[in-house]
Image: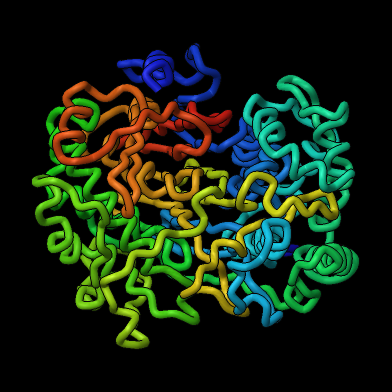
Length: 588
């Protein structure tokens, strides 16, 4: 970088006022601080307010969307530490507005050379499995690679806000206080972590200040020396030694050779838009598939919207079950497994797969389909020049359609950010440490991930990325960014992202209302449907008539926290942070 210049019903009602029926003026008063912000230049929406503010500050200092995204992500590693951190990993999708080119970077946690990664872990006790879940973290490598490729400011400048937040501290939010309480038994296994987050033997309270001097020191070394400071030398030796002493698997070599996967995003045309999704091992294909099937089944054309249209919601429940069945099987590291992501996300597969979802009594179990015959479908002209390539099936038994597996990352938590700059460049990025505070292993001022536990019988092995449902998404219209969106919440990520996208772009809802609106979540192995409060009585009745078992789910942190920036045709940028979490949207 040396050549670069230095530089619920109640929930929905509460945000109803924040979103307003009419467009709000920048800085207009809102009953919920920072949840919906309007501007005409850059915009950052992220899972924690100090981190969103850090990104907006970088935009004001002349940085572009990538500079702001990297600054925000490092700041989240300080402030949203139960969900993400430099001991974890993630993925991001970038769009260059001038060149009209898109790129996806995957830097998720990765298994290493130890052959135990390939062994069956079902017989391990919980404590051993937790420690063995700590895979090689990719956060630092991924963020710095993305910044090197597309940033404008110096590494030191984009990391400065995170370092300041760690050194000087920040005000603990209600969500962080709750997650510390939820994970207190895990945190007590490390005296340093317990002293930091439970200084009186109980969780820090909202409003108290959290200072992380050890993390500040680690970040300062990374800012000064780059990725080698983290992946080689003293930090790497300490990390590996700590993990191995507890029975974990990360070696110094695993850290030294960690690769960032740079590739083209998935792309599909949907209602005149080019949807850029996250390719395997991320879960973007499921978002594209839900949108495509919803369009094929008429759900996206609902004139009454998803809250009141019983037929549309029951059809959407069926679509989600089919996509969950497919997504739980057709996944894995594409470097070692054949994954038909393009076929899964294609319009032709959606039309075939969605037939009949809106009628009849639903079966107990949704069976996965076979997208391989659609894998070579031609891409529409609206997609950027470079898009994710087609795959070739590796073996006949990979096409067996009689079994459904369910992803093992159902309890993971995540953090998301969306950025658009004044020039129209955009970044959508999702990061995580896995379950709350990851593996619980605390070293160098940060927690190591638990993402290695996402590997299942089909996908486990050495030297490969773990699976994830993370789906950072960018949606274009006429080559210009219209929506930057993504979510936190593991298995809730893809349905939440798709439902909000439909509300905004198909049903014309304000982005603030769309994100606050109630959602549904299904399981392919059961007929249960989790339903947030706010749907009409007709929706509940229709679900029961179709054979579903609706269960009430009060909106909380795991029900898909969506953070988005909607760019209107007149140039207005509407940034929205999901009220299910403590995040904020901040304008440049």
